[in-house]
Image (cartoon, rainbow, N blue to C red; front, top):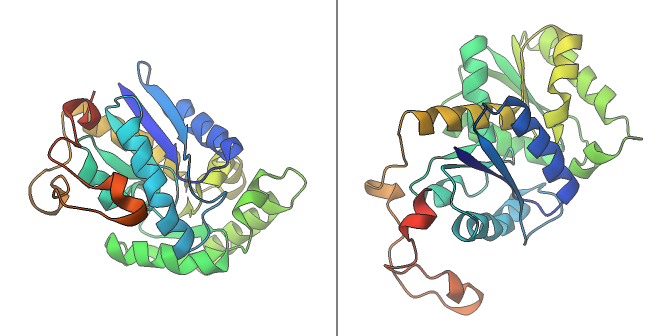
Length: 253
């Protein structure tokens, strides 16, 4: 089984952190193909960054080697439904995966994320995924995404402190890490906190393995059918869907 784990930002060092987390939980025989977007922002920290990241994400799915499933390694799950349209292989967003995993192991969880401006994005996902009864609160640490890569920053201590507040103030039984760049913190935090700490990268990889193992693919009835052929203009002309734009090799290995 081959799973492509796509970092929708353009920071290669973050991809390496994400890939390590994915490979740590992958089953024997599962190959993790880590990809860094070739276009977009160095970090995704708002609605505009998310919107600009989607074309790079689609490029990785359409132009990369055939894979059995894809993981979008950004907690905003940017372009998730669009990605599901262009391939029949399962596509898993790490926020959706993490929230579902947390609901399996606790009756309530809190999300601890990065900047305050991204908190509302996570709150929208909580609503979209029907997790209002499970999610106690989304907490922002105001840590820039790329600061997670800086060993001299106090990011780890700040995140730990916010997680402790989530347990004591929100009565959260589990913590969901609200950024793919936090993937390497899960075990450290779980040892300190004594509650399940869910990294969405790991959760998404395991859900992807399960879906592929069950022989399931993305439905091509209704709104997740392949994009309708039509003319695109301007800078997006090359992205115009055609009857031949999605080939079997691009759908699934």
